[in-house]
Image (cartoon, rainbow, N blue to C red):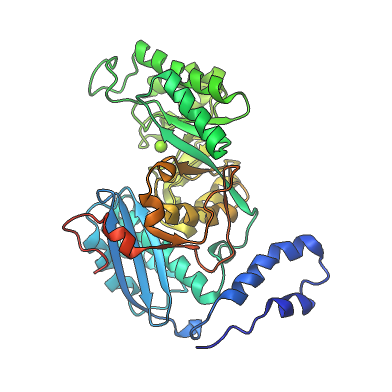
Length: 426
Ligand SMILES: [Mg+2]
């Protein structure tokens, strides 16, 4: 095994950084540390992918992949949402595009997977979600092979910690309980921003089980809930509200108008993602900021919404939009439209930390989603290995200067949650 001879002392004494002051030294200290700490088993030029395996948990909602190499490093990645039943898709992409290749050309491999799938659904959905998990694992491999954290491979960091908001869901909570939970998010965990759902398919005041229209009592219930949240957290905590695309355009306008007094950070997906023009018209009708993007895919899928001014805030899901490099491209494109970047995240600690690397590497990052289930369900700590903490006491993910993503799948712990009758890392 070849030992990394690039010592931290030599890094700072060779004159490259020595004269540029404390701020620069601090920025690069993590880089030096991670390079120093990483064993290099052989030359990255000889690195080859030898196998790809996967497992599913959470009713197949979460796909975890591991990419194996001819050296002693393994890449880890996660995909969500459109990953149901994709065991054979993982195998197909692995055989066709990955096994036998050098994983360090991450963007080229991602583009080959995408182009190879143009007649297999590579525009959106399942194929892209699987590609996302694999692309993430390639970045993890590249970081481990080169001894660098992924954010460094993405161009370096703008910030050392990533602000998150806590999604507490709860559309069926009565207003007092929603307010109490909002306050708990802030007081107990230190979050500076919270999110609640207000669409409720089971609301007895819905006019109809199938139409998309909000009723007056339904609208009153929503307003009462968010008024209680604002009352509970005070004026300085950010509040996001999610509709999951369950309303028609005029209902979206009514909801946005009704929530104007509560100074939301955003109203999320008031209408289905398929019609970005509706987003743009709702946005023009209200002072409530409009957010969308968790059901748009690839940089291509964000171009038109940005061109027509559909959203105030963009929220690609970095476990389904095409990958971490794709997230970087989406963020940079939205930056040219003066639109902030606030990724959606419904994954595990692996997904959260993967997302954090992209959030670190773009100027227009606003906030990243975090889930209350991390605090309520021990499974999430069991299924990964990481060197904590995942969260600071003021509601941020601290970046860690370890090679790759910095969170790995704990295959044995995950096994007890595996989806039955689906091969698990076989
Ligand atoms: Mg949402």
